[in-house]
Amino acid sequence: MSKFPEHIAIEKSHPTAVLDWHEQFGDRTLIVEAKQLVDVMTILRDAFGYNMLVDLTAVDYMPRRPRFEMVYHLMNVDSHTRLRVKVQLEESHPRIATLIPLYPIADWLEREVWDMFGIKFEGHTNLKRLMLYEEFEGHPLRKDYPKTKRQPLIGPQN
Amino acid sequence: MSEVETLSAVTPALPPDEPEFQQKEMLLNVGPAHPAMHGIIRIQTKLEGELVVESDVEIGYLHRAFEKSCEESTWNQAIIYTDRLNYVSAAINNIGYCMAVEKLLGIELPPRGQYIRVLMSEISRIGDHLTCIGASAMELGGFTVFLYMIKGREYCWELIEEYCGARVTTAAARVGGMPYDLPEGFLDKCLWVVKEVREILRECDILLTNNRIFVERMENVGVMSAERAIAWGWTGPCLRGSGVAYDVRKDFPYLVYDQLDWEVPVGRRGDNLDRYLVRMEEMEQSCRIIEQCVAKLPGGPINCSEKTVVLPDKKDTYGNIEGLMNHFKLIMYGHGIRVPAGECYFPVEAANGELGFYLVSHPDEHSKDGCNDRAWRVRCRPPCLNMVASLPETINNYMIADIVPTFGSVNMIGGELDR
Image 1 (cartoon, each protein chain N blue to C red):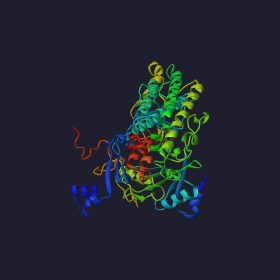
Image 2: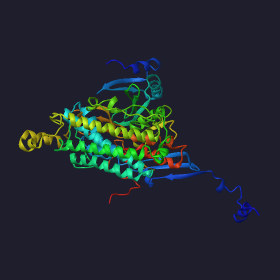
Image 3: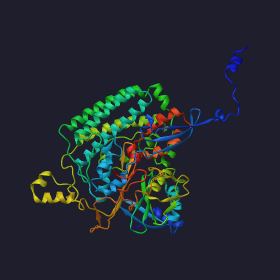
Image 4: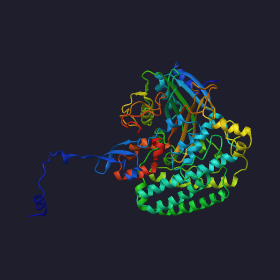
């Protein structure tokens, strides 16, 4: 499959940034190296007009390695083109740079991912749980968190 | 003796360095039990007099593990969880989720099924907008409007009830089809409801749009520029109120929206009044869509013919062995709808904006065919989260009383916000 125009432009300045690309059901996807994510996102926003971060989430592919995948959905609101950017993260100390300087909405979405998956965002100044409470133990959307697990503050099932 | 001197004699002189009286700022919690916060959100504000100088929004009071529950249930079982996202327009959530699964399966509904979905979506959208504006108007003292609009919403919900038996928890879609065909006389009732809704809109337009009290509290309050709105990921009526004509139904057409004649209203200033006006006009456009659907509704099947996805007719299930086997293959544990490995994102235009489902199907260790009978990951992109996340930008530097109309125009729905 031929490369996307975004891919070709990124390769000019960051030859090792894009690890893979594919198109499935019409959704174009770039898989990017974690260290160069912010650079890639800056190019996509400034040169290609992807001015909206539609969604930011993670997927836990346990027991596959690398275990986690960050998924960013971008959209150019003027030309109505979409692009998905994915980053793969290792299981031990998953961390990635924050996107708050580029998209303010990343603040809450990254807090949600920290809450649910325990992925840390470097540079995020207010990385606390978004949905759950501070005393909650574990990160519930990880595949090794059982649905029936009880929390200490909830107490045993009667 | 002058009057001033008398007063100072009565009031004891305060020491000027008393910290309590030098304090200019005050911290005030709005919610979670404040009626205008609709139950489940807390805004910590820092006030200077009545001016909000800083605010922090806290959510999560209604978190019910929607995504985890969907990942633990089969593709069709997850539909009932989607009812509980935006519970005012549940049918749109059902349809959005089912269309995302259909995108993974690569199937499409026959025309009649698609028209019924459009019909259900637009009836739900009218109900949602009526609730939003009615509640906003009530919070500003317009209780009459609330009663009129809730009456209109009741007409819409009665239509939904007639179709699927429930007003709120609709489950009004299935993967690969619709649960029922339209009941007898449904189309005539649709037209009657459209007529009634138009009458309500006309009345409320007279009551609100030129009402000085209402307009002065809405105009130039909660202003969001188009550029900032896009950066915050706003969609739906709020983004269109800021002047960006982005509508998923027009720009990424799904179902039969591209075959219908309707328009996307946009605002100019991006304030509360524009968001109100956009919603009012959108209801009129939804009425137009419903009328065209009623006129154009084709005959034929409502479900796609894929036997591995859609349950057979009841007469086949009870009448012949093939139908019975087909039925059991679809509902037995570990069988069900087998979705091949893959991922997709599918957006629909919900009442608050772009409702997107990012689904991942990934075979687990028990899978022998590389498929899975349940989602590996169900991510719901809730449209109102972006507007709530950016609340500090729309309520800071306005009066504390302006929080109420601004928050009302966001149409925060706890079910989809907290999931």
